[in-house]
Image (cartoon, rainbow, N blue to C red; front, side, top):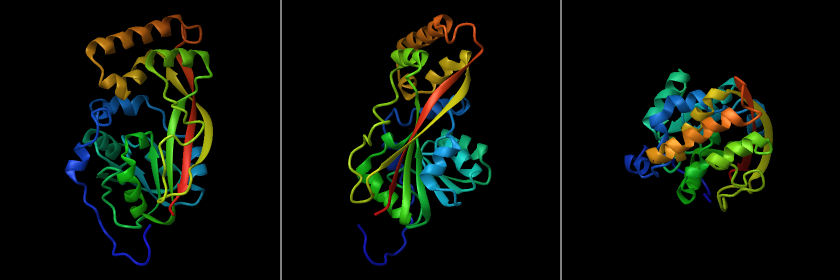
Length: 262
């Protein structure tokens, strides 16, 4: 914890700390436009639960192509986006002209101390190194500021979604139950969980693209990628909820973990 007055610091992005991320974490850039075109955005209700209704200055950390940035801007928040991958960053800047989009990472945030009211992380916290990221997020947040980590998780209670996950793997990892990523003290309060259910209409012919936007696919061998393509194509052709349908409503549960700066 920090006590008393501190000199405001500005941490420049350290290229070594950006490239030190895992291959999986940095795999999305090669499919940045595919990712942007097929991944779901975040429901406004989830953002309101995380941050409240008043406009804030918000850091979208690990912003990717700016899917969460779009929801934040639509809600009236002033957003600065930070993303380590240059190809993802380029798409975010193109999608959101006028938004500050910076190179950086959770472990090296290029912002001054106490410069944002909230930090949000969409679909990215599991890539962070918490022992380095948490004090850095704490540093850029104002006193009593909010950190909110969000995940869109396919709702596997739908049988066809469960069948999809049987092929590509679940993306839940127990997120709907309790914070799974270790202690956040002394930097933040105990995470509170909020759940928002929503659906996204997806062309059935693009379910393979949804799988192709995942890091597990992007880092797989060509043989494994071909197997996944074939199995998803077979699922679309044979599952009663998918076969013969041009579109399908993909059910999601957006898990939001909200905590406050201590």
